[in-house]
Image: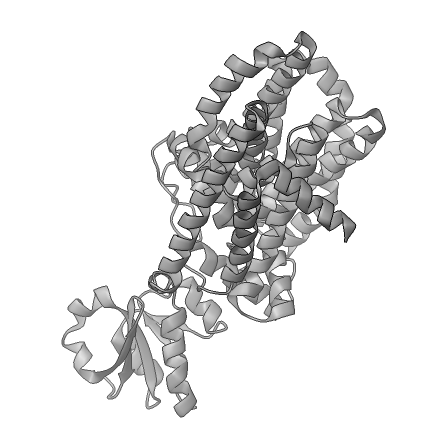
Length: 494
């Protein structure tokens, strides 16, 4: 109890009472919000359904996209997390999102400890990291990125403390570094290693620390151990579904990033974007703090750095360079990629928070407190606004099949003989999650008629499909609208 009181007093002194209260309220609201809106397609619906299948089938080796179709696109760590949530809390939004919220808290804890050991205000880092837009979104979303961020943050922190930390802790930090690498292999594959080795290599080159970097860590044995630790899953996955290794390493780790609009994606459409877009995505993903990064860095260099000794300046410059490189490494790596998402920059956000906290720390507590209060309040207002739009405004229903599935289930209560809900032409991933894998997809009303025979049949049709079905709709009875869909009952066979 005394430690909690001490932590509260330290936070209030470092940030100001109003900032702490707003931040605490934001964390509570984010936790509650995990259960307030449905899983949205495509990402959350797809990954939530894969996790649901994993829990239902008790198959912890192969993630399944659909019955008989394995999902080779990602390793299983994030699916394991959500599947454990399903086992504990049942099939619902909170169950599949809560483990990713816990992972976000772990990232914050790692960044907090990293800042503390580097004599950067850890409370500044906590605020800057957790209120960045991308982190707020990812902390409650069913995606693979937060699991990757745990591994990358742990590895980047451990490397720096292994070379620059206390002598007694270097063995422990070296062990944690390779643990981080193993986590990344299970979260997203070897692409994660690039986001760690790239900043380390460039930093060692620019700071003339190549020899120190090479000798400071047992690279060869450590990397082999990290690979061997996760190799059993990769081998078992290939044994269960042959072809996985080729698709995963060649397709997902080469062609996806080098071929714009890659046609080999087995599970959807590649995200074709202009090359270099990742830099713009970084700016809006790290709002509101990206707006003050350049200004605070310039003020810090002009007013603060000149007051430090040469030795202090050298140490801080090296740390600043390392943090800067860790921040922009996702942008550097994905600059020439034609298939990207804004969440790809997430592994760089913890280092970004440390870098900005370093600058704010040097501007004086009064200025830093004002900046943090304004930024935190702004993030809280934006988040509450977005949450209200998703829930009260029902915007989430337009990107999910939950509401139309519930409308169908209301009919099911009255008639136990009806067929599973059938989606015309296109079945969203969330429909499978909310129907517990029972929703069907058929290409035409004629096909549905042949399947259903004499049983009561409910059909979900997208509203933008209705105009082309005028004549055929005469045989259907409209039940109601929900989200982007209209539910029909087939009365007479076509």
